Image 1 (tube, rainbow over the protein chains, first blue to last red):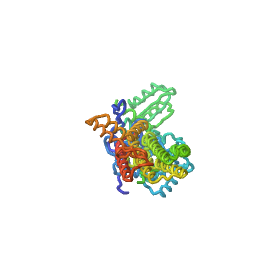
Image 2 (image 1 turned 90 degrees about the vertical axis):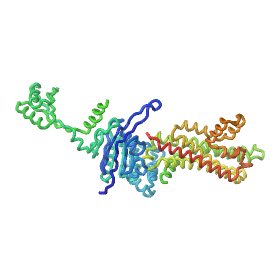
Image 3 (image 1 turned 120 degrees about the vertical axis):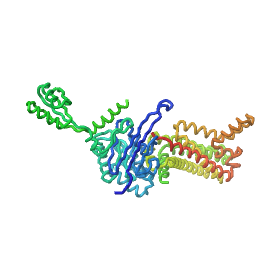
Image 4 (image 1 turned 180 degrees about the horizontal axis):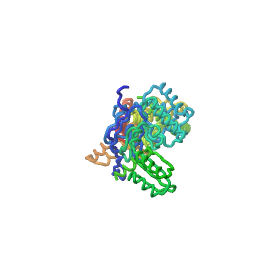
Amino acid sequence: MTDKPNPLVIENIEKSFQTGFLNLKKVKAVKGISLTIKRGEIFGLLGPNGAGKTTTLKMVTGLIFPDKGKISIFGKSSSKATARSEVGFLPENPWFYDYLTAREFLSMAGGIFSIPSDTVKKRSEELLEKLGIAHAADIPMRKYSKGMLQRAGLAQALINNPELIILDEPLSGLDPIGRRELREIILDLRKEGKTVVFSSHILADVEDICDSVAIIAKGKLRETGKLSELLLKGQSYFEIFATGVHNTISELCKSVDETVVVEKTISGTRIQVSTSEISNNILKKLVMENIEIKKFDSHKKSLEDLFMESSSNKSDEEK
Amino acid sequence: MGAIFSIGLNTFREAIRSKVFYSMALFAILIVITGHFLADISLHQEKRVLLDIGTGLISFFALMLSIFTGTSIIYKEIEKKTIYLILSKPVERWKFIAGKTAGLLATIFTVVGIMLIFFLLELYLMRISPGTNILKATILILSEVIVVVAITIFFSSFTSPFITGMLTIGMVAIGRLLPDLKHIIQMKYEPDFIRSSVESLLQIFPQLYLFIPNGHDFNGVHVSITSDFVNWSFTFWSTAYALTYSGIFLFLASIILSKRDLT
């Protein structure tokens, strides 16, 4: 492995926008975000609408400029256009030159990278085929469906065979088949050794394919790290459903541990405990007292739980 | 250069796939109608009238095309967010301005070229020899196009198409009427600080009267393509002026765009 710098390093970036009457109001969209994205990983940038994901990605791709902080792409400052020579970018809801065909558009994109025309032609054919729009390659893009436009957008992002691929909400607006295909394409890119950064609020997709994630809310970084580690970090809990006299069950449980949550439900009693040790003790006691156990569940924290906690609880702290 | 060429080619493609070429067809029809009409009523003055009107129409159409195609050229890219797909690639923003300018100029030069072919064909059919003045007039017309395109791109880099259009039309109107405005100021006001300030202020505006085939020379003397037309030295210096003036405006446009957040 060579000592090539990390594909993307973001250090304490901040960005404000002027809004309101005469632009007198200042809104901080990004408040000191730092991230390091390692080679060959799929990195998911999560956050609710207005969290600062797109603003962050626009700063990375040089479309807007950070007020503070530094962004390095393969060790080069993002303020230099040349830093983006190994980057492919698909913006959110990409707009295209609708009078161009996909083939012409890819030819233009390749030309911007100063790639020889023969190479652009060959690469265009490969990408059009791979992304399933070869049949429409010579039709003006104004006639494309949303899914086809997203594929054309991805094709232009890959025309330079980039090492770092940045996709802003690539799965939004796609039907389930389109989402599945795009997920497979992203996984293929990882197999080729590429680094993929994508923003999304479709948590299931992120959970399926990401190696690492960052959760952003209200412009601040809430969590970041390996997805598996983040999920482990979150507390799991156990649920026992029993039928019998509610008060008896409640007393039994409290005698084991005071912190146990006992709730009466329509069909019986729900008991929630935080550790396997306590749950074992309670189960033993219930069996000894001949109380019927209807169900036992072990819950692990999901990405959704993590996302909801990170984006709501910590936002409340700011108020 | 790859980026500038690609952006320029795309701008050219966009223009020729839009309604720009309708104006060319309209001109072709106009010139043919005008030619035949004039042949009947001009009492042996076909050459003078046809050359004056023909070059005047080419100049007018080129100017209109420059203003109306140029007004939204940058704004539209930002508004429609197509610029994201360009500037997220390794392209400096000045190259984007250069590419858009090159594409727009290529489009208007092509239209002027086709109009000129129609015009020369008309002259040939009327058995009128245009002489070298037509070449000088074409160079001046294209020089004016360069200046006006640079002005529209400058305004388009930070304001809306409507305001760009208004400001450009204002600049063009003042630029074409500069000798008359200077004359009015000299006639109406005594030499003082205010008069010299206004005269200096007028220097900011493009000296577009230099490029009109039937306009004024540097000294404000009236010239016509069919009589005492400008010499090659005038043509050269006017073109040099056009390139310098437009270079300054394009440089300013590049600076504005390079500081701008594309939100």
